Image (cartoon, rainbow, N blue to C red):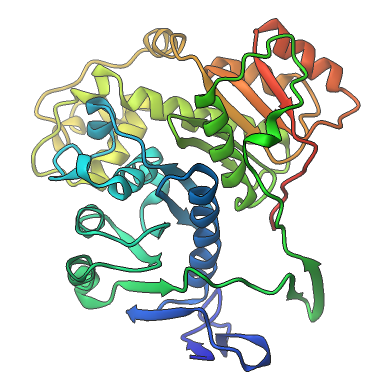
Length: 394
């Protein structure tokens, strides 16, 4: 297939629309089901690059959940605790522990479930039955992977009344080194960002604490590769082989850090006993549970817990999760990793990161206030590396 006609572009009024290759080459994809749209393909091709690179860098199967050309999370295959399974709504998935790929997607989808509603999924390896079983019951727009088992394909083709978008990509496809795009009739040309992110990137440790653990290196790799395919400005918190907070597309670096930090906080709080034991009614669907948890953990919890409202969600009225209780729970979180796609201009980013348990930082460096940022890291005994490489993505 050399060209695929799309229903429309970003919006219904943007016609005609299509995807194609230059010089009459074949597209590196095969559409196995559905009819993906313009934004679907933007998500598919960006998300595939992320998981393919992440898998090669870590040697582990990888998955990501994408929305509007940025990841809500990305993760590698690491066994999940019982608390994390329950918080991610995959504790009842049969065979989860036997499927590394399903574990990776369970983590990625479970990180920021509100944002992942209607996601595009990318898998680094052949989609198996267990991963397809997770996807079967989630609201999702489509998936891209290098292959599918017969059973997985059968399961996925049943989604959305048979209209679920399933794309297979040539795992060996290598794009041209020069990429182009048009904006307002003007053609932009640049070399592809082939900068390699691996453990060799973390040798310039600029803080007094230089104890960079192997787990932290893995999580910093997850963070930086996630950043490489996230709309900038962006900051990513990572822990346990997964991105737990993505702050994307903000004009201010501190707003990136606050957004990512608040998402990381919610991810941790979802695993607290208070949230895991919320008395949901059996007839409340997963998306509605996600929404309820989001409100319960937020600043407007009283809207959920007022009489006449909570009865629609819970079998009994939950006790509020007080600000003091949340602060106490989060104060015990340590060892989170943080990556930034550009330098931190002020130490306030580190101050905010510390509140979310950050102990390891990777950023390009190069600010006139690097000394202030380093000093703030030293105050909290953090380890910080300068990578020397910006990772903007637009």
